[in-house]
Image: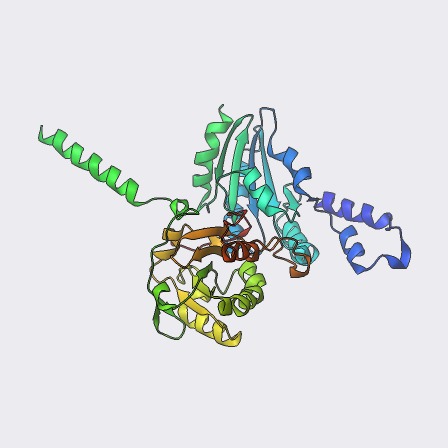
Length: 172
Length: 202
């Protein structure tokens, strides 16, 4: 939370250049502290050659089952906080909702260190590149450690279901 | 001995059950023939593909009342029907969601929505959720372009920009229809897009 405030503050202390020509949308963009990535920028986060277990969840605030299962991911993160574990929540929210809906949601749930936004129109390319079995529905979740990985185009119904699939990776 | 036989029966049933619960992505592939179905339209009549006379194909769209992606495409789906139904490619919209999981997708809400937006196409309810798994639909909206003989010729997205119709660069579905009209195979014949998961009881 403090981190988030600092980030906001730092953005305000460096006003955007361009004067009047900078419309409302650029001011909006400048007060957004959640990183917004193209797929090329996101891709390096989706494979790491190290000993950390990564859980990547694709979600959006408009997606009811995603929001329902989100607390299970937070619980998972708490349970494995002392281990080599990292949770990444890739938001597929709509552009118009970043400031209005997504950012308040992220702050309210203290998800600042986990959420990134994927903004890339070429979904026909990146959905299949992330996993060839993924048809594009969300929620969808990927678990990986080194070269071992699995992809789940499904909803999880409790923290135990998630732990079951993640645990084997921690012990690799 | 009896015990072993019992175990064998159990094993047999276990295997039989596993194969019965096949994952939804086992649906139709491009080139396969879709089975006809009979689903209730918002006007209360039962509708099958064979009821459409003299058509050149069908734009089967799994969509619903509640998914933001489906709603962003709603006007485009109406426009597609208005443009292509006269050329023999009507839109056949199917709501695949279980309304006990997604209350806004019940039959009465479908009727209200189709009336409010004056849907020019049939809007069918996949009551019992048998049709969407046969197709292999996984999300809304999810399009299956069939030819006159119900062979699947294109599966996927309507175009490449859900959020902004003005910024669409590729009209996948329209290109696929154009290919069929000129006797060619759509290329690409499959595309992927983000959408809402189809709501089923867990």
